[in-house]
Length: 167
Image (spheres, rainbow, N blue to C red):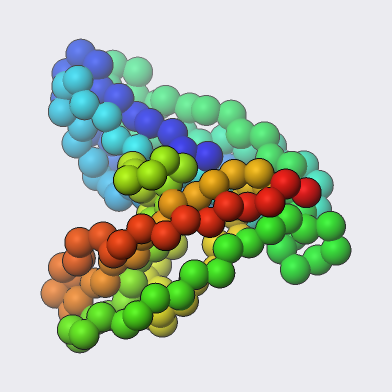
């Protein structure tokens, strides 16, 4: 699920996110993060269950806003990839960078041309990545970047499209 934090009346510094519930993870955002007044920051909440079934959870962002703890409840229902009854996945691969790199970041969006949100929590060491957090019947748009030893990230690669079939 892609979500947005917005600073409505003034600059807000978000210091952390606390996630509860089995299988939930927040990606695409680093802390501390200052959001200028009238601006937004996107992030992604993924649900990757360790066992089939439902799981309740929550994410709470701590900030210097007038209401310093902004929370959202989460409710996931899923299956474990690779087990009977599991959903789909998208296998991606790309040509390696001609420069010396430490690894790659993979980004996903649901609209052509973005916005894209990073889906890997740490650098992918090789030129392949499997996205097993896709939803049936959804079209995804992917791009990748390379990251060098100075932590400098390249521009987005060309976009590729994956249409996940309905069950």
